[in-house]
Image 1 (cartoon, rainbow, N blue to C red):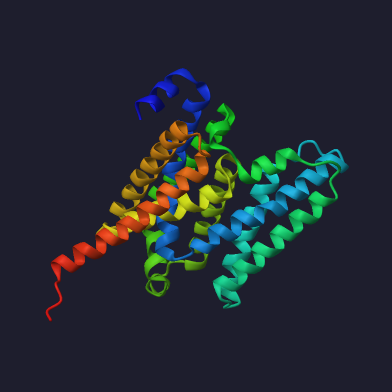
Image 2 (cartoon, rainbow, N blue to C red; image 1 turned 45 degrees about the horizontal axis):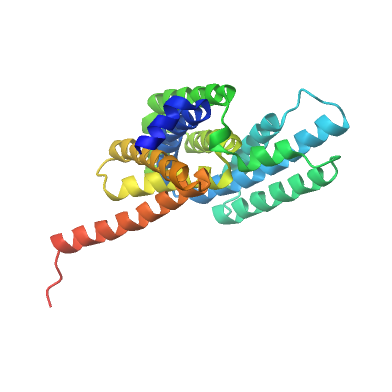
Length: 286
Protein backbone atom coordinates (compact mmCIF):
# COMPACT_ATOMS: atom_id res chain seq x y z
CA UNK A 1 0.00 0.00 0.00
CA UNK A 2 2.78 2.55 0.73
CA UNK A 3 4.18 1.81 -2.75
CA UNK A 4 0.79 2.64 -4.26
CA UNK A 5 0.64 6.05 -2.60
CA UNK A 6 4.23 6.76 -3.67
CA UNK A 7 3.23 5.91 -7.25
CA UNK A 8 0.15 8.15 -6.97
CA UNK A 9 2.34 11.07 -5.93
CA UNK A 10 4.85 10.35 -8.71
CA UNK A 11 2.73 9.34 -11.72
CA UNK A 12 -0.17 11.33 -13.17
CA UNK A 13 -1.86 8.24 -14.63
CA UNK A 14 -2.01 6.64 -11.18
CA UNK A 15 -3.56 9.80 -9.72
CA UNK A 16 -6.15 9.81 -12.49
CA UNK A 17 -6.90 6.13 -11.88
CA UNK A 18 -7.47 6.76 -8.17
CA UNK A 19 -9.64 9.82 -8.79
CA UNK A 20 -11.63 7.90 -11.42
CA UNK A 21 -12.12 5.10 -8.93
CA UNK A 22 -13.41 7.47 -6.25
CA UNK A 23 -15.79 9.16 -8.69
CA UNK A 24 -16.95 5.78 -10.00
CA UNK A 25 -17.57 4.65 -6.42
CA UNK A 26 -20.11 7.41 -5.87
CA UNK A 27 -22.02 6.59 -9.06
CA UNK A 28 -21.87 2.83 -8.55
CA UNK A 29 -22.69 2.99 -4.85
CA UNK A 30 -25.79 5.11 -5.30
CA UNK A 31 -27.17 3.67 -8.54
CA UNK A 32 -26.04 0.16 -7.67
CA UNK A 33 -28.06 0.25 -4.46
CA UNK A 34 -31.22 0.96 -6.45
CA UNK A 35 -30.31 -1.72 -8.99
CA UNK A 36 -29.75 -4.36 -6.31
CA UNK A 37 -32.84 -3.33 -4.31
CA UNK A 38 -35.07 -3.44 -7.42
CA UNK A 39 -33.42 -6.72 -8.45
CA UNK A 40 -32.59 -5.51 -11.94
CA UNK A 41 -28.92 -6.43 -11.89
CA UNK A 42 -29.19 -8.05 -15.30
CA UNK A 43 -30.45 -4.74 -16.70
CA UNK A 44 -26.97 -3.33 -16.17
CA UNK A 45 -25.44 -6.27 -17.99
CA UNK A 46 -27.90 -6.02 -20.86
CA UNK A 47 -27.35 -2.30 -21.29
CA UNK A 48 -23.57 -2.63 -20.96
CA UNK A 49 -23.44 -5.09 -23.84
CA UNK A 50 -26.10 -3.39 -25.98
CA UNK A 51 -24.00 -0.21 -26.17
CA UNK A 52 -21.75 -2.02 -28.65
CA UNK A 53 -24.55 -1.49 -31.17
CA UNK A 54 -24.48 2.27 -30.71
CA UNK A 55 -20.69 2.33 -30.81
CA UNK A 56 -20.66 0.28 -34.00
CA UNK A 57 -23.19 2.52 -35.75
CA UNK A 58 -21.33 5.67 -34.67
CA UNK A 59 -17.99 4.26 -35.82
CA UNK A 60 -19.48 3.25 -39.17
CA UNK A 61 -21.02 6.69 -39.77
CA UNK A 62 -17.76 8.43 -38.87
CA UNK A 63 -15.56 6.19 -41.01
CA UNK A 64 -17.77 5.59 -44.06
CA UNK A 65 -19.91 8.72 -44.25
CA UNK A 66 -17.42 11.13 -42.63
CA UNK A 67 -19.76 12.07 -39.78
CA UNK A 68 -16.86 13.15 -37.61
CA UNK A 69 -19.17 14.74 -35.03
CA UNK A 70 -20.61 11.31 -34.23
CA UNK A 71 -18.27 9.70 -31.70
CA UNK A 72 -18.53 6.21 -30.15
CA UNK A 73 -19.46 7.84 -26.83
CA UNK A 74 -22.51 9.52 -28.37
CA UNK A 75 -23.51 6.25 -29.98
CA UNK A 76 -23.10 4.42 -26.68
CA UNK A 77 -25.25 6.97 -24.81
CA UNK A 78 -28.00 6.76 -27.44
CA UNK A 79 -27.96 2.95 -27.40
CA UNK A 80 -27.96 2.80 -23.59
CA UNK A 81 -30.90 5.17 -23.18
CA UNK A 82 -32.84 3.43 -25.96
CA UNK A 83 -32.21 0.05 -24.31
CA UNK A 84 -33.36 1.37 -20.93
CA UNK A 85 -36.58 2.79 -22.35
CA UNK A 86 -37.33 -0.37 -24.34
CA UNK A 87 -36.71 -2.64 -21.34
CA UNK A 88 -38.83 -0.45 -19.06
CA UNK A 89 -41.70 0.05 -21.50
CA UNK A 90 -41.98 -3.58 -22.59
CA UNK A 91 -41.74 -4.82 -19.00
CA UNK A 92 -44.44 -2.46 -17.75
CA UNK A 93 -46.79 -2.24 -20.72
CA UNK A 94 -46.45 -5.57 -22.46
CA UNK A 95 -46.13 -7.44 -19.15
CA UNK A 96 -43.12 -9.36 -20.41
CA UNK A 97 -40.56 -10.94 -18.10
CA UNK A 98 -37.61 -8.63 -17.53
CA UNK A 99 -35.06 -11.37 -18.14
CA UNK A 100 -36.59 -12.11 -21.56
CA UNK A 101 -36.49 -8.54 -22.84
CA UNK A 102 -33.05 -7.95 -21.33
CA UNK A 103 -31.71 -11.01 -23.15
CA UNK A 104 -33.24 -9.77 -26.40
CA UNK A 105 -31.78 -6.26 -26.02
CA UNK A 106 -28.41 -7.76 -25.08
CA UNK A 107 -28.30 -10.01 -28.16
CA UNK A 108 -29.65 -7.47 -30.64
CA UNK A 109 -27.27 -4.76 -29.41
CA UNK A 110 -24.23 -7.03 -29.66
CA UNK A 111 -25.28 -8.32 -33.10
CA UNK A 112 -25.88 -4.80 -34.41
CA UNK A 113 -22.49 -3.66 -33.18
CA UNK A 114 -20.68 -6.62 -34.70
CA UNK A 115 -22.50 -6.09 -38.02
CA UNK A 116 -21.56 -2.41 -38.32
CA UNK A 117 -17.99 -2.97 -37.08
CA UNK A 118 -17.54 -5.63 -39.78
CA UNK A 119 -18.57 -3.06 -42.41
CA UNK A 120 -16.26 -0.37 -41.03
CA UNK A 121 -12.94 -0.17 -42.91
CA UNK A 122 -9.99 -1.31 -40.80
CA UNK A 123 -9.89 -2.48 -37.19
CA UNK A 124 -11.27 0.23 -34.97
CA UNK A 125 -9.05 0.15 -31.91
CA UNK A 126 -10.93 3.08 -30.40
CA UNK A 127 -14.15 1.07 -30.34
CA UNK A 128 -12.45 -1.78 -28.50
CA UNK A 129 -10.93 0.59 -25.94
CA UNK A 130 -14.35 2.14 -25.33
CA UNK A 131 -15.87 -1.30 -24.87
CA UNK A 132 -13.27 -2.83 -22.55
CA UNK A 133 -11.77 0.30 -21.01
CA UNK A 134 -8.65 0.72 -18.88
CA UNK A 135 -8.79 2.48 -15.54
CA UNK A 136 -5.03 3.19 -15.79
CA UNK A 137 -5.57 5.18 -19.01
CA UNK A 138 -8.20 7.61 -17.73
CA UNK A 139 -7.76 11.14 -19.08
CA UNK A 140 -8.64 14.50 -17.53
CA UNK A 141 -11.65 14.76 -19.85
CA UNK A 142 -12.87 11.35 -18.61
CA UNK A 143 -12.65 12.65 -15.05
CA UNK A 144 -14.77 15.67 -16.01
CA UNK A 145 -17.44 13.37 -17.48
CA UNK A 146 -17.40 11.21 -14.35
CA UNK A 147 -17.75 14.27 -12.12
CA UNK A 148 -20.72 15.46 -14.18
CA UNK A 149 -22.33 12.02 -13.87
CA UNK A 150 -21.86 12.04 -10.08
CA UNK A 151 -23.45 15.49 -9.77
CA UNK A 152 -26.43 14.38 -11.87
CA UNK A 153 -26.90 11.18 -9.85
CA UNK A 154 -26.63 12.89 -6.47
CA UNK A 155 -28.99 15.68 -7.53
CA UNK A 156 -31.68 13.33 -8.85
CA UNK A 157 -31.33 11.01 -5.86
CA UNK A 158 -31.77 13.84 -3.38
CA UNK A 159 -34.73 15.20 -5.35
CA UNK A 160 -36.52 11.92 -6.06
CA UNK A 161 -35.23 9.66 -3.28
CA UNK A 162 -38.62 8.73 -1.81
CA UNK A 163 -40.15 8.05 -5.22
CA UNK A 164 -37.24 5.88 -6.32
CA UNK A 165 -37.46 4.05 -3.00
CA UNK A 166 -41.19 3.43 -3.46
CA UNK A 167 -40.62 2.08 -6.98
CA UNK A 168 -37.92 -0.28 -5.73
CA UNK A 169 -39.69 -1.71 -2.67
CA UNK A 170 -43.47 -1.33 -3.09
CA UNK A 171 -44.53 -0.31 -6.57
CA UNK A 172 -48.19 -1.23 -6.04
CA UNK A 173 -48.52 0.91 -2.91
CA UNK A 174 -46.76 3.77 -4.71
CA UNK A 175 -49.24 3.47 -7.58
CA UNK A 176 -52.16 3.60 -5.15
CA UNK A 177 -50.67 6.76 -3.62
CA UNK A 178 -50.73 8.39 -7.05
CA UNK A 179 -47.02 8.09 -7.88
CA UNK A 180 -46.41 7.52 -11.59
CA UNK A 181 -44.45 4.32 -11.12
CA UNK A 182 -43.82 3.81 -14.83
CA UNK A 183 -42.20 7.23 -15.23
CA UNK A 184 -39.90 6.87 -12.24
CA UNK A 185 -39.02 3.26 -13.08
CA UNK A 186 -37.95 4.22 -16.60
CA UNK A 187 -36.12 7.27 -15.21
CA UNK A 188 -34.27 4.96 -12.81
CA UNK A 189 -33.36 2.68 -15.72
CA UNK A 190 -32.11 5.67 -17.72
CA UNK A 191 -29.98 6.75 -14.76
CA UNK A 192 -28.53 3.26 -14.57
CA UNK A 193 -27.96 3.34 -18.33
CA UNK A 194 -26.02 6.61 -18.14
CA UNK A 195 -23.94 5.22 -15.29
CA UNK A 196 -23.18 2.08 -17.23
CA UNK A 197 -22.27 3.80 -20.48
CA UNK A 198 -20.04 6.46 -18.91
CA UNK A 199 -18.21 3.92 -16.75
CA UNK A 200 -17.97 1.37 -19.58
CA UNK A 201 -16.02 3.88 -21.65
CA UNK A 202 -13.64 4.38 -18.72
CA UNK A 203 -13.28 1.04 -16.94
CA UNK A 204 -14.94 -1.50 -19.23
CA UNK A 205 -17.94 -3.82 -19.19
CA UNK A 206 -16.84 -6.38 -16.62
CA UNK A 207 -15.68 -3.86 -14.04
CA UNK A 208 -18.74 -1.63 -14.27
CA UNK A 209 -21.13 -4.57 -13.77
CA UNK A 210 -19.09 -5.75 -10.79
CA UNK A 211 -18.96 -2.29 -9.21
CA UNK A 212 -22.69 -1.75 -9.70
CA UNK A 213 -23.67 -4.97 -7.98
CA UNK A 214 -21.07 -6.37 -5.58
CA UNK A 215 -20.47 -3.34 -3.28
CA UNK A 216 -24.22 -2.79 -2.89
CA UNK A 217 -24.76 -6.51 -2.30
CA UNK A 218 -22.07 -6.61 0.41
CA UNK A 219 -23.41 -3.46 2.07
CA UNK A 220 -26.94 -4.84 1.95
CA UNK A 221 -25.91 -7.83 4.06
CA UNK A 222 -25.10 -5.61 7.04
CA UNK A 223 -27.43 -2.61 6.60
CA UNK A 224 -30.69 -1.98 8.39
CA UNK A 225 -31.82 0.95 6.26
CA UNK A 226 -31.49 1.79 2.58
CA UNK A 227 -29.45 4.90 3.36
CA UNK A 228 -26.96 2.75 5.27
CA UNK A 229 -26.81 0.39 2.32
CA UNK A 230 -26.11 3.23 -0.10
CA UNK A 231 -23.37 4.76 2.06
CA UNK A 232 -21.89 1.33 2.68
CA UNK A 233 -21.93 0.55 -1.05
CA UNK A 234 -19.90 3.69 -1.78
CA UNK A 235 -17.44 2.83 1.01
CA UNK A 236 -17.00 -0.77 -0.14
CA UNK A 237 -16.59 0.37 -3.73
CA UNK A 238 -13.80 2.74 -2.68
CA UNK A 239 -12.14 -0.06 -0.70
CA UNK A 240 -12.32 -2.54 -3.60
CA UNK A 241 -10.84 -0.03 -6.05
CA UNK A 242 -7.98 1.08 -3.79
CA UNK A 243 -7.17 -2.50 -2.79
CA UNK A 244 -7.34 -3.61 -6.41
CA UNK A 245 -5.03 -0.83 -7.58
CA UNK A 246 -2.59 -1.62 -4.77
CA UNK A 247 -2.45 -5.35 -5.56
CA UNK A 248 -2.27 -4.63 -9.28
CA UNK A 249 0.64 -2.24 -8.80
CA UNK A 250 2.56 -4.74 -6.66
CA UNK A 251 1.93 -7.81 -8.83
CA UNK A 252 1.57 -6.25 -12.30
CA UNK A 253 -1.84 -7.93 -12.65
CA UNK A 254 -4.53 -6.19 -14.78
CA UNK A 255 -6.14 -3.55 -12.58
CA UNK A 256 -9.74 -4.16 -13.64
CA UNK A 257 -9.61 -7.92 -13.20
CA UNK A 258 -7.90 -7.53 -9.82
CA UNK A 259 -10.61 -5.18 -8.56
CA UNK A 260 -13.35 -7.57 -9.70
CA UNK A 261 -11.70 -10.56 -8.00
CA UNK A 262 -11.28 -8.67 -4.72
CA UNK A 263 -14.93 -7.58 -4.86
CA UNK A 264 -16.08 -11.13 -5.62
CA UNK A 265 -14.04 -12.70 -2.83
CA UNK A 266 -15.24 -10.02 -0.41
CA UNK A 267 -18.86 -10.81 -1.26
CA UNK A 268 -18.34 -14.51 -0.55
CA UNK A 269 -16.57 -13.71 2.74
CA UNK A 270 -19.35 -11.29 3.70
CA UNK A 271 -22.01 -13.96 3.12
CA UNK A 272 -20.10 -16.44 5.29
CA UNK A 273 -19.67 -13.84 8.06
CA UNK A 274 -23.37 -12.96 7.88
CA UNK A 275 -24.29 -16.65 8.14
CA UNK A 276 -21.99 -17.13 11.15
CA UNK A 277 -23.44 -14.07 12.90
CA UNK A 278 -26.99 -15.30 12.38
CA UNK A 279 -26.08 -18.79 13.54
CA UNK A 280 -24.46 -17.37 16.70
CA UNK A 281 -27.51 -15.25 17.47
CA UNK A 282 -30.02 -17.98 16.72
CA UNK A 283 -28.41 -21.31 17.54
CA UNK A 284 -30.34 -24.33 16.40
CA UNK A 285 -31.24 -26.59 19.31
CA UNK A 286 -30.77 -30.28 18.68
